[in-house]
Length: 407
Image (cartoon, rainbow, N blue to C red; front, top):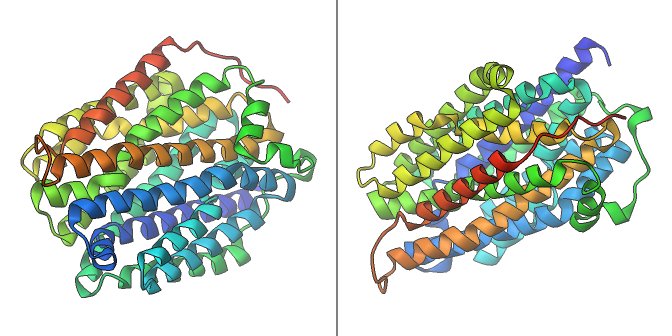
């Protein structure tokens, strides 16, 4: 692949993640009110239902992630990424038209099945960038997500004032526009000599685990990645509900706070991760990120003034180092013909974390903010995420380095 094609592929991957983040963020400010309306329930109970929506999406992503990763190793990255964007476009349209809660759940199932954007994006960049450069380019994925997460919630908060369904249709239109752009601009990056036969036995979470467990040093990092991703999933799981219950924020204020998070994430992953990984290495950069994020969890659990959360987020923004650094540590350990399978496995780990998070954080938020709560304390879920983050840090400290893989 020449330099022009490599740049075109990188641009489309970043555009895909950017649009995915916009779609993900644009609906967050309005989703609580839509659940309240369709479910005819209270905001505390809507937090519990919202957790089940996240769980359904994550469960389907967990089941289909390795399948998508193995398909990209066999047939290439291009068809998988294009199919993923089509799936997201359909998902948001279904949710926008949803007359009942069942339709919302159906939309989340569709999105989970085609939720290959991140896994295949990471695999695409692994195809065209060397090992020493992967943490930096993986950080660009995080930066694209962060920028999208600036734009998405800001738009969602503003247009949500005119109707809770309008943001879903905007997200659907953006997904289909990206699909058209990719059809004409995205070249295939997975070289034919690096492709391998598709085997159904490896195209599932258990099969991927059984195969990857033979790769030295993968499973300890995978366990840390799972724990850390679970802890970080507290934000998409409960933030919109938490801030409305704790600080009585409107949809616009929720969107503004999420845009602030996105801006900080984009700055760290676009500007800081490359120099910091070069100076400290991927392992120590991951430690810095986990320490920063865990400190943020604890402070947010205790804060009682809404605007202070902005200062906490800024002070602990280096948490954005952890994810790309851990993924780069795993990517360094597998050969070229397993990059798609690894990223599909990572997609399942991300989905497993997204399954665990709403089962842990949403019920605890509903319990400690409900009318029968023994102590009303909306910050309880953040104390739980603090403990999970601390455990992930201890495991990373105890993990030894493993040699890089060879083909």
